[in-house]
Length: 338
Image 1: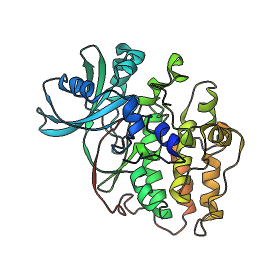
Image 2: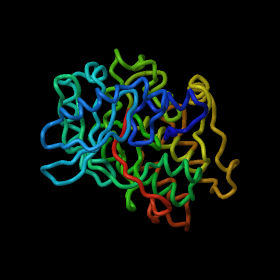
Image 3: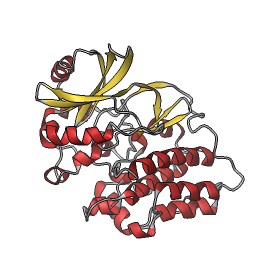
């Protein structure tokens, strides 16, 4: 399978598959070899609470694997993300339960709902979400490369709505990227809220699991890279700016090796999208560039402000079109592996 994230080369492909993402195709032979074995995965899945009947594994990464199960209580199919035991140990059950209680209260049409969570044999931790039929934005971009301006703005608007909702409740996503944006039946749904916070634990932030990076460099803000102070909503604004840039330009603002990408985020200006596409309004370009300002104070104060600027820049063009209406294929999607 091909990794669902942007691919600069084979090494980058493996590296990207390591971060929490809801794309079941985010699996490579290299990352699979470094993950839990099939036997371990099946054993942990079999030890889920009795209400969940294991069906199949749909993806895995460096920090977790995802299975599909029948929820015998609700009579629905669900996606269950199970953390690797070593990751669960680092996160800690008390921290996990405390923060998941907050996440479970998020109730927004553009946020993938957390419906259950718990521990498995005191060895691992799991999260349960609805099993969604559709595709990720990463899958759509792999197929189409560039999106119509109206589609890109519509997706950005819905993601921004989810972010504003979470930000007003003190939650920062920290990992906005195409693989964490689901497109399903006319809906845009943001997955993995709060997951990356566990990855930011001080003793964990600078290490990797089984030699695979747990970050996605192309969408990290300068302050994330520098680990300077507490992140706030403007870090998510920057990441959303990177996603919008890719939807319109066909690639993230900075690509290459991890070091090259980090240098770009911290010191370089991205090439204007209007130089890459002739149909990009100048004001769209300006809004994206502002979202990608190196200093948080120079960006939009909120994701909603960014989305409003994009919509205003559209002029008479309509961005009300279904964000996933151009999807040519339908697949089943859940909160997939990290």
